[in-house]
Image (spheres, rainbow, N blue to C red):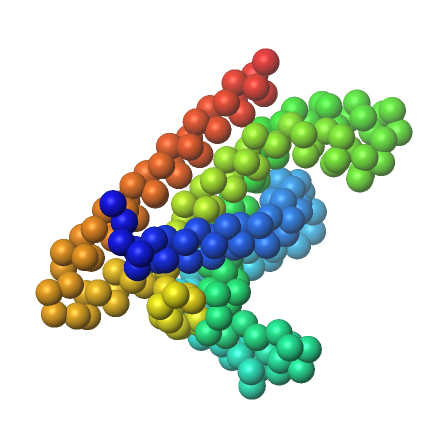
Length: 226
């Protein structure tokens, strides 16, 4: 049975992870589709997409703070419009979205690459435009893979720590997700038992997400194989 504090932590974690996935979904789909094709500059786009994996998460959070903080070049403009991201739940979701974006793109890219290219060639012969081919062929066929990518990104988002604590801080009831809560209780004397409870909950959620993603990928493979 969860305590009210644990329920709050779980609710914050789900809110942050859900918004991180939904905000990055359209960008992940477009970039994944582009990377599944050949075009000039593909290597540069691929490197930029995977940059959050290469850089330390704390550095990613710091860069977001420099850009989107109230004194940053973008953050000051947003603040003038009444939009604040640093040290807020929305900021935690943004930092999580940036860190999980490479995983999200890779999962969706595999779905696009698994589609039969002959279908696109046939559609081109029938004079279907690029947008028509994307929305009527590529997107429906990759749909199960995109759904699996969303589940995988959600499970990954639940474990994000470094970028979130740097950009959004560890504010109970606002930005404190499961990993941040585990870190917080470990700083308290005798907090090991509570940390183990939270770690167990985090492990269960992560395993459930991975299992769901695996089942969706199998279903997608079976659907594409006919």
